[in-house]
Image 1: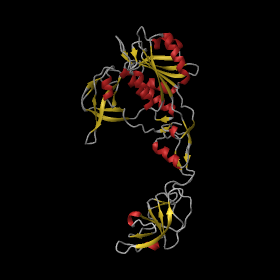
Image 2: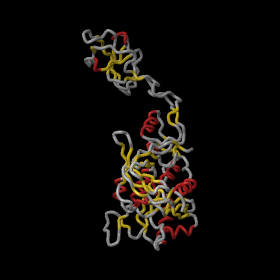
Image 3: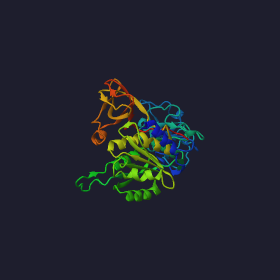
Image 4: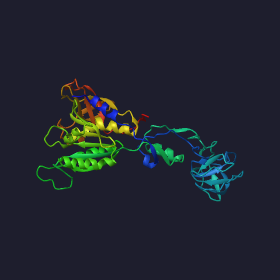
Length: 414
């Protein structure tokens, strides 16, 4: 029996980062940047107004007050996006809109709220300060400034920044293409008649959704029956579009465990028992001419999901160029006790919460069975019980893997 860490290390060592390619900006969302991006222009690229109002010379309105307003003729309008270059003459005002360029000669903007909103002439009741309501050129970003470092996982904020400086394409690592296969002659598609002895295929939905959450492109293949020839045919057909294959079911010691039977003959996939609960039967290796990595996960739904989080997600992060590969953990206090098998690392479904005192707590959700999907759906974290612990006492401190935490993305490993 191998340890969790040994099995994960073998998988991480066998996969490489996907090669970078140029991607249009919005399509690069969620991908790891493979270049340092510097600004090719200033932001703002010109002085512009931050308010709707009137561009003025401060010396013309410095005496303005509620009791003694200053009245100036309005010599024109400056809309945002206007191309006409206007200059402001002494003793005049120009009506200006938010984002419009500041005319030559103006050194302040009077918000429309400080005026009567006049068109031909305007009555100003309050004097602005120096450069009030003017967004100065380059106050946000200077030309040549480093904007986003290589390795950053691009989210909406970075996408917006890159668009602001005119970048339409960037070099990123692509999303891994993950093919998910569930095996079992008992499986039926949701929405179809169930029949005697049949169950709905939930694993392929769970794993495909988990792959998408990890940043991959997921292809779900309708349940494959317990037939070796059919499994081989489907697998070979799917390899053309796969950077990674994930199967569930058929990896134990049963008479109809076709995944293990077929892949064992290849000699490129190793099946192991891993010292963990749930998820003891595991397999990993490569298949096909391109040596595509493949994970063979257990068929019980909780075991399959936990195995994905512990083994597959770190591999996908490496393929995406993200580091650290393993999921970050937090510590929390157990609000109740439970048992754990000796010699196995247990991943207990728990609900994680932070109290008013700022302390984090976890409580078990549902029973320990690896078929209990309602408990899995109600959990938002996995409490990690070490191999040498057989009894988790109330008040014990545990490492916890958060399942609902926003993936901040981290930095690239190169």
